[in-house]
Image 1 (tube, chains in turn brown, green):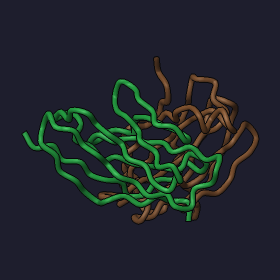
Image 2 (tube, each protein chain N blue to C red):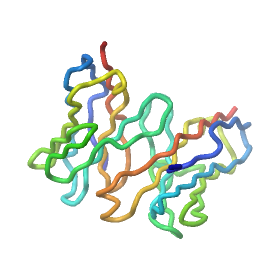
Image 3 (tube, rainbow over the protein chains, first blue to last red):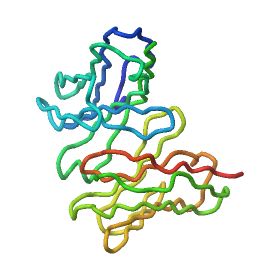
Length: 116
Length: 106
């Protein structure tokens, strides 16, 4: 079972470059999430999409944009990368609503991004 | 604040039970308590969840206080593979705190 797949696994960018992190899930989940994790820290929510066609800001949305391309895919875009965006990025998916509350969320293996 | 409060770190001897506490004093009546763990260089993985009653699964047990302001994750017999960061979260927002780093002593 693939679960949540993130691409790429590693990326090095120069300051000012742009890139899109891809995330896809094969569990027919409605809700998808993007997080960043800095060294020694917990995960911080960047954006989430409760269902196809909707997106909402999380705790740290500045410098990022997202697109819920379809039910399966949720991408995160850095328009002009900065060294402060060096982090590990995780995507997650889950059911939505009360069913989502009573079921587990699934996480990808992460994208390790370095901005130099 | 929607986040929970956990100790930064804990240690336990191998093959002994481990009790990981979590405070969530402002939790709403319909919000579930979820526990995830993160092994080194991996994404978080689900451990267990509950609403009001204590819960058991093959990985762990979850004891929820009667007032739901706190809960305890119980690993019945810790192994070296249980060394990880454990996160207690309120499922409504799926937001994480800093978690508890569990070290298992051989």
